[in-house]
Image 1 (cartoon, one colour):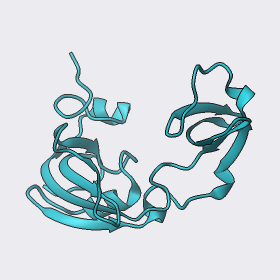
Image 2 (cartoon, one colour; image 1 turned 120 degrees about the vertical axis):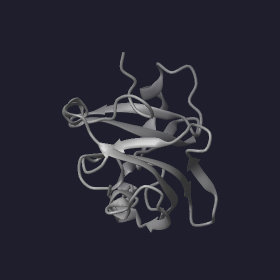
Image 3 (spheres, rainbow, N blue to C red; image 1 turned 180 degrees about the vertical axis):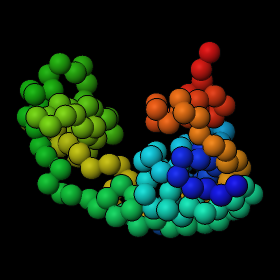
Image 4 (cartoon, helix red, strand yellow; image 1 turned 60 degrees about the horizontal axis):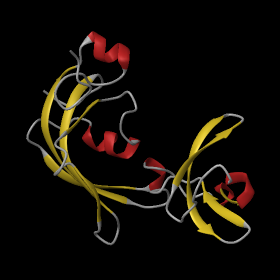
Length: 161
C-alpha cells in the first residue's frame, strides 16, 4: 500500500536542524500516526512521504517555505511589562497565548527588561531548514469516523473507548 490521500500513515522520525542538533524524535514517545492529505504534517514532509510504502526509510530536508515559514520580524514586538501584570513572573523562553482580533497566537518571550517584554510571534522553527530521517512503519485506510474528525483514532492516535 502506498502513502496517498486519506491513508493513515505511521512513521518513526528524527528532526534535526542544519547543525545536526536533534530537535524532536519519535524514539521516546513512539511512532507518529496521521491522516495523509488533511494538513496534519508540514507540507514539505507530507510531500516527501507521498508514494512511499511500508518499510521505506529516507531523509529529506524541508525548506522553511514548506515547513513553518520564513521569519517575519514584524511579529517581534515589545509590550509594556504592565500589560502582562496578571502573570506572577515573565521570563525569557516562556510561551504565552495572546488574543488578537483575528484569533489567538502563541508567542515566545525573547527579552525582558525593567519596562517591557519582547515577544516573538514566529513559530520557533520558522526560517530553519528542517532535516527529517523517516521510516514508514505502517499504512492503512482511514475510517470514515477518522476522516470526519480529521485525526487518527486508536493506537498512535486519539484513543477511543
